Image 1: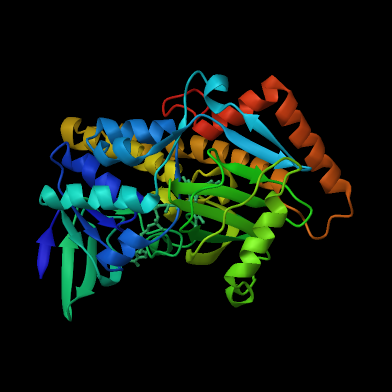
Image 2 (image 1 turned 180 degrees about the horizontal axis):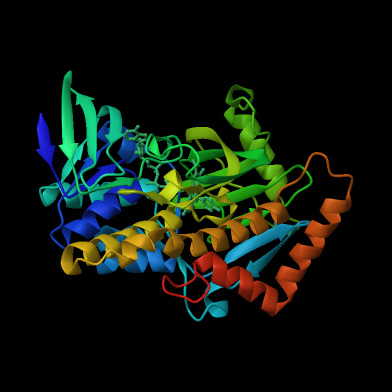
Length: 397
Ligand code: RFL
Ligand code: PHB
């Protein structure tokens, strides 16, 4: 079957879904093609920390109803090392801004519900998605679903299909410059049915490796430990994970880690990745399709939201005013923030993880850095303003 739309979107992750919603608010038609089924997309456990700017955008565009009811506002985080915790007062140090704990899959569910209620077109289980004519004014997407071939002709294509998607690779060789750094560690993450042992997130530096205590709700905890990037999850029965978390998060004060049934677990490699530019012809890349940041800064989803905010503005200007100025500037308007966030995520990662090849030098630097951040207001303020997220229209991004 052949259909037409204004913007063809590949991927029903946060970036593709939000883009489709922002365009719909301006009566711009889009079609989303998603490789997975709806349940898989809605249950995929990933990010949990939303920046103030992300929450503001979701609320301003009618997506904040459940977020405001169920999201948990945090005004600080703890950095824990050498058996003691040190609070970074995020809100006090950033002019009252804060972060929100609300699972990525909840954001995804909210946008899917809103799009479908408004008659939005999301084709799940779309196989073999292929892009053509991206250097023409009539690009097209083809795909296979329910044993039938389909084609969608569009004005523009948004590649929102994540790091392993097809859109980036459809740009001719030689156009993109790729920056890729793989860190010598990964994260083993668990979701557990247990009341969080902390009110605020704890980032712990320890001889045995980094650990993070996060949460999703008063009944659900989310925790991570640093492991080798090629570690096999079968080496980590639940008891071993809890034991390791207890060791790495231990304090000299009266604090204990509550344990409970593990609902989900997985290992994620840590990498920094950026392509420049984020566009070619009528194809625009957004979110993880264009960049990946190590999760220590809690930024990937927030960066994806910033990209599609900018892309929606540019497409709206094209349809409303016939102006291609913002479309031409799309990549430049995103990359400033992308590199600011890469720098912050790298700073957090290098400060908090143990390096196996370290002869003691790196460890000394890390402790000096941690002590500085926890004792100097200027250093803590810098961490805080990056962690809560710089404003979407700020001079640094
Ligand atoms: P996604 O979420 O990967 O969505 C891409 C979608 O495209 C689909 N797809 C295709 N569809 C059609 N045809 C194809 N050929 C396709 N190939 C792929 C996929 O099925 C999928 O549905 O990318 P998007 O939308 O750009 O969103 C990015 C975020 O998901 C990501 O940056 C965050 O999850 C990163 N992240 C965090 N970000 C934060 O802001 N705060 C956090 O606290 C945070 N914690 C995390 C994280 C990521 C983690 N992992 C697992 C990588 C914690 C972890 C452990
Ligand atoms: C999470 O809650 O999943 C989370 C929190 C902070 C991070 C990364 C992930 O830096």
